[in-house]
Length: 199
Image (cartoon, rainbow, N blue to C red; front, side):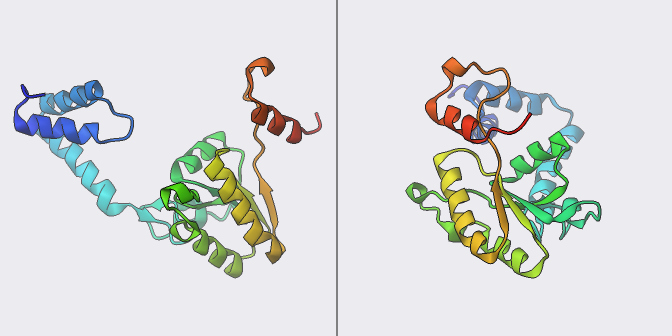
């Protein structure tokens, strides 16, 4: 927008560069910052800087952490013999909300995607293998998304881990609660049938 003064336009552009933020949302956020008291604006800026400088990766699971070892990996109440492999730290947050999984995690930071030039070496698979070689891990649950890249990554991990004598499992997927069978696609229905269990 040509009518905005440059500092405000720069702020709008920065918000606009965030994933999922459109022009109107970026404008609203920029004006919110502009309307803040100075102390709140400085605190907001400091929170961004702190997030960038004080958050790193857990040396064990590769999840984000403000310590060398994240609270999940450091916990003595978690089952460290069961590792759930996920694509990103957002998946860890989603699974932790369920409060049913008592094992630990390993974050890949993406999926294998030759079209995007992402191979196994760009993911945290080497770190997963190091954990398996050094820790007493009995089961690896592959919880990548049911996308083409997620499935390819799951198959790759399964191929390299099964010869090590580990139990490698894949999360079940299929019909979401409240879905109608008539509207489900063939792949979803197939997975729902193949992932059936006793009731």
